[in-house]
Image 1 (cartoon, helix red, strand yellow):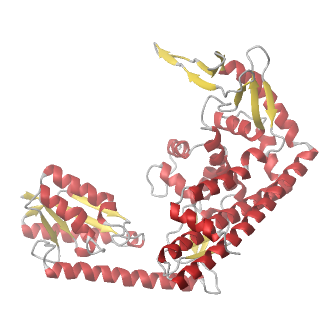
Image 2 (image 1 turned 45 degrees about the vertical axis):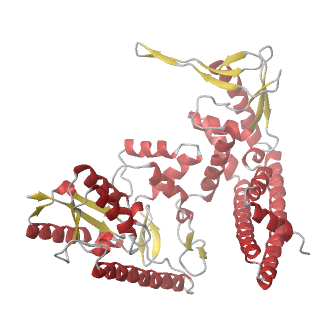
Image 3 (image 1 turned 30 degrees about the horizontal axis):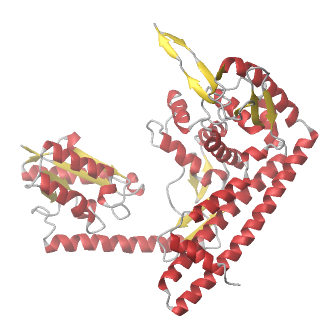
Length: 513
């Protein structure tokens, strides 16, 4: 019998609950039997939970894998259940799949189980079928968005229907923690101490803990959990397809699985890593050592090797300008005890709490001033847009609209930043924050934990080959974690990178009083 491929697409999680795959497979195999074709099990390609309306054909991984397999094997025949499994955009299947394969396999045959004749993109009936499926998807999408908006704007704030997040079960449209909730909490705890997402996935796999899919944990799975606000007890919906973008947020919707403090610390850790380099490094003082003689930052040198199955560690901090190097073990043995003694004293100091709260208050005031200034700029951009519209200046109107979006984006960033600061102030006030360090300093710490503690509390270390190293500690703990000046420079830098006409529009915008 002649070999052929079969392609099955399941578009949503709801279809996982029915027999969508089995139904499509049965129809494809029966169709193949009638046509005298053979479709082996490993020739059946399944695209799971993938929309053919929201994703064009070249974004569907399994469809592109099928394309590669057909091109390599030169097997020209593939069977789909119906045209809707091929495409719901009305054109990308032809552009991304059919026509490129037609060049490689001129006698390509694409069948659907509802037609005896092969698919022909020039055939009027085939064109109409694809257009009808697209229209059907548009109607369904519009109806779903309308229902979602109506649900979110109703007085009874319950969770709209969607996939239940890992760690919860849903009862009467309410999320309730289930037996997997502790796994989510554990993930947040590990990440708050600098454990990478890849390492967390390895830890869970080594412990043979099933993932949400029941398969192996992946970095992307951990990332999705860490980015999901649902685990802090908040439901967020960002509806992009409505005529105007709408955002909804329901606070305290359900029981959280993680302390918001852990989420904030994890986000701060990411910023620290961007500034000072990786956390899982044996060079605990990476980018923190300054030569007292020339003022250069010491670099790292790793000449470790392995001979006859034995590892030999040759790791140094090096000042290239002054031409000296220090073994990391010797330096760490000197610096770590001093650092931990300081922290032990610092976290129990009566002035620590007052100083930290005062600094966060100062940050909050600076944030407020920035929001006020940005709102003024936003109002000016709106006014400039109105004037440009009245004068028929399309280019300036477009530039003003762009600036409005950018200013609003910056305002949203500062508002989010302000919420983070408020949460940290609450954690300090309740002593939750510094108790975290007080308890862990007596324990055996991993490399990432030691590295983070150093980044939190040490400002700089002055190094000299003739004198003992000098530790300079942060006068305020949050200066390392919340450098507001860097956020302001980043905002200014983003505006500088905009196209020239948008910069000009901003300058002209400032002329409005």
